[in-house]
Length: 331
Image (cartoon, rainbow, N blue to C red):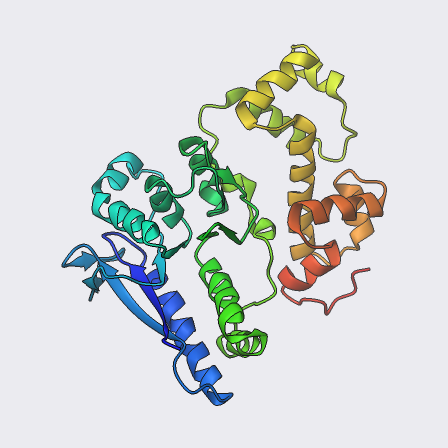
């Protein structure tokens, strides 16, 4: 069988590490497969572009080949800073979106890394599809592309030949899934161990920091969130909350929902989990005492809510993110 042709679409301002991350892991998998008896390379990777010269983020000049037919097209992300004019940036990448559209029309599987999803969406490939992207820019993405069924907790999402991934290191989650599908679980597992890459992640939820998500133009909801943050351990009381802000309960729910896209109670659960995550990462206190501090009298109920928001039980989260892992006296 001929090797799978994997083309990475390079463009001005793209992250150079995301250009080479997937091909590098595929190269490692090729060596692993050869050590287990594979007769020929499974992948043929190249960096392609509709431009003759590409300068990536950080000033790195990339050697590129002309766009040509490939089996899989990988679209890396770019530096999406708060001051970036996204409209102008995407408009300047018209040749790239045309290439993505053309490759997809010819049957090529398209994969975006991180905010490369913006380019794939600009090409019109994500309308009506499930997709994911970096949690930090998920809200911005959802507002810009309302016809995309965004799944912001997902690490890797594939829908009818188009794959999107979460931020940066999720390119390795995709690559390992890809290797597992084409070379089998043993090669994927060995490649992950050699590269020190986690092959057991299923969600980006544990890494989300709501404090970093932009909230411009949402004064009422910001004030409510601040009050809830200051009263995490108190029982949720909607009438008391409404009285605090001199409005009706209906107004609280409507204004907060319009600005934040959720209920105050849903935000309170997220805030409590955020605080619990910090305590699990930085202290040796028992899970039960942490649950009480953030407002849950029943450790079982706390554990259930924690799993719903992070995909992990409190003890599992501590083992992953506490500096000493499981080597402490937490109950």
